[in-house]
Image 1 (cartoon, rainbow over the protein chains, first blue to last red):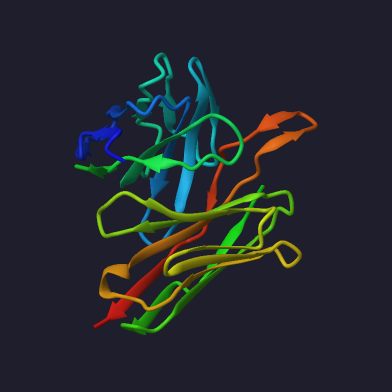
Image 2: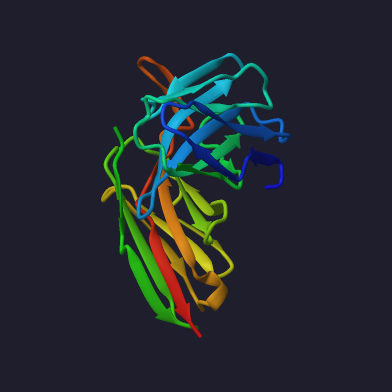
Length: 113
Length: 119
């Protein structure tokens, strides 16, 4: 799935700082997703977007924000309100519609300084 | 909302043996069940998926079975090889139209199974 690019691969956040994780796809997918992965746990949905200029909260949206100004891009901002941001963040995309396979990027590992 | 339970959390087998991972889900309306393989530090990759109108699907050494009545589905890997060692995740989602609008794309994942295949 080389069509989904996440950057940076590693990111460090200071206390009180907002950081933005980038996700770009060239698969011409309408839908994009952000997941958080913690050790020993499955992936949990943060935000998802089915179409440009529209997005919905997932199961753990508090402390995060997103935008979807372009079809190709779905950046995630981890705000200072997210008190436990250390995790592996995965972006995914899919075709729009029911039951479409999701394809993942390589992830960004966020740590606290 | 949907809840997906996955067992076992770890599974160790000898090369050539079979491996079975089971998941149960809570929402009877769920109709799409993918399985992902994630190697250490890598992205999850879709290995097989099944929709609720099918009871079983096979792809070479991998098969998935679905029991809608019991709300569980399983991944079967035959003739395991060391390169099958990874974390496997099941997931479930509902996609379609019902009162309140159309909903799709929201996958709920199980907690993952660490599969180790010993040479």
